[in-house]
Image 1 (cartoon, one colour):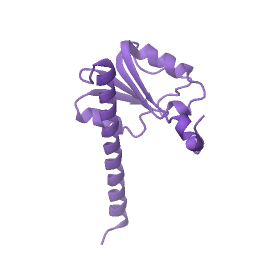
Image 2 (cartoon, helix red, strand yellow):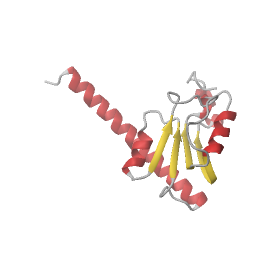
Image 3 (cartoon, one colour):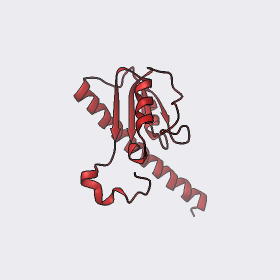
Length: 143
């Protein structure tokens, strides 16, 4: 007989596995984009994930022996705060489904450019409003 705690553990494990699977897919997509457009790779790069959420993308980077860190709303207000990161210290910034939640993106971009090394790369992912306009505001935090 499966106890309530065992069932909850199994649900959490499945959810975590799904998040890691999705984060691996995101990693593969980002790696392909960087290779295609910049002829670069993640190797020997410092990666910052803005809007890290549950940290699954950072976990994937760790499994690949890559240096990654993340910030989320629990750590910093992207619209107001300075990122607690040294200037010109990051090679690649990723941000998946964050920018559509910000009313004012100027600080987000100013801080991103501040922490990026010269010729650094920013990858932003957001819903395509043109094709998703009917559902875009189903998430009340989209602005």
